[in-house]
Length: 206
Image (cartoon, helix red, strand yellow):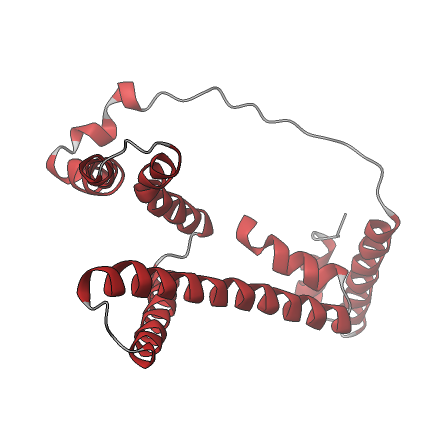
């Protein structure tokens, strides 16, 4: 499983102390990203939505409370997505699609002063239809779209194999596996366990 490569490599290549340090670094990186999204998301909701359109005369204490509630909702939403979507690549694509919804109005508004509110909302609605609503509803309404041969054309796939000399760490790991196998075989033979010995003889590690 490619998604387990990081954890497996850390377990096999790092010692106990370095494994703990790696875990602490991952948690620190996660926490820094989470608090950044909490602050930015809460600021956008409070200043650009609540203060601009709902109540521009609220007290700072109310703004702070609303920001805290918004930050909690952002974290709860992220946890919910992680519980029901186990594919990291799909989660990454989801973040891209959310960014696409507001990317065009943002950048056009930054660099083209003649952009209008109607054009911005039209862009948001079109992106929502093209990237969210239609991909979820069209396969249900028209199942033939999923199996249409003209939409299933893909590039040719080629498998390549690279050969290299074994690194010293690979040699040591292979020797340890072989020694463990030889010990198990010797124990089985000394105990008279013929079935286990026969099974081990056919499973000699490379």
